[in-house]
Image (cartoon, rainbow, N blue to C red):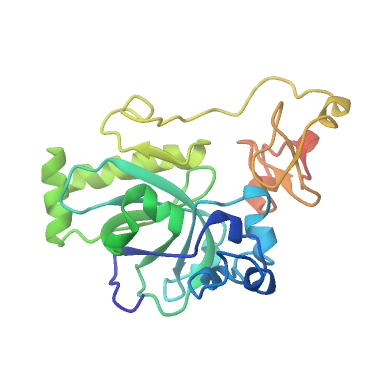
Length: 263
C-alpha cells in the first residue's frame, strides 16, 4: 500500500471462501495459504474472522487508514466509493468497514478483492476515487475527494456537470445506497431512486411482524434479517432496515425484536 496516495483505492485479501477462516485454518486450506490471503487475518472491527465474515457476511468489505481522524468510530459503518478516473463510470459500491490499515495514507481506502473487482480489474491495482463513510441510516460521516486532481475534473466533464455537481450527486446517491439493501448503484443526478441503476431507498416496513412461532422456521443469519428473511444469530440485533449487528444503530430505534436482540 506504500505506493498508494491519498484519495486512491487499492485492494487486499483473497477469495470469499477463505475470509471466515482463522490464520491456522487458512494455512491448511488450498487457495488460502498465500501472504495476501492472510491480510484479512484478525479484522480489528470484529472479534475475529468468523465474526466478520462467517455465513457469507461482509463479502464486500474495506479497511480505512489508522491515520484518519477518529478512525475507530467508523468501524462497521459503510465506505461507499466511485471511480474518478477521467471517464464516465457511474458505478458506486457499498462496502463494510471491517479493519484498519496502519501503513495507509490518511485518505486512502483499501478495498476487499471482490469489491475492487466490481470497479476495476485487479491488474489496475490503484485508482483515484471519491468515497465517503455512511451509517446504515444514511448519515454521512465523511466525504473524501481531491478536487484539484486532473482525473477528478475530467470525470466531471465526462458526465457533463461541474465537479461540485458531481460531488453533490455522489453524496445524495450514497446516502440512499447506505439505507438500501443494495451493494451497488449508479450515481444519480436527479431525485434519488429515479436515476439509473438500482438506487432504491426502502422505507421500514409498516406491516406487523409475523408471530414468533413463525420465526422459528426462518434461518439464522449474521447478515440480512426480518420478515420472511431470517432471524439474527444469538447476540445480534435486527435493525429497522433488516441488517444484523450489535451497534447502537442496529439495536436502538426501529430495532425488530422478533428477529433479534434489541436495547
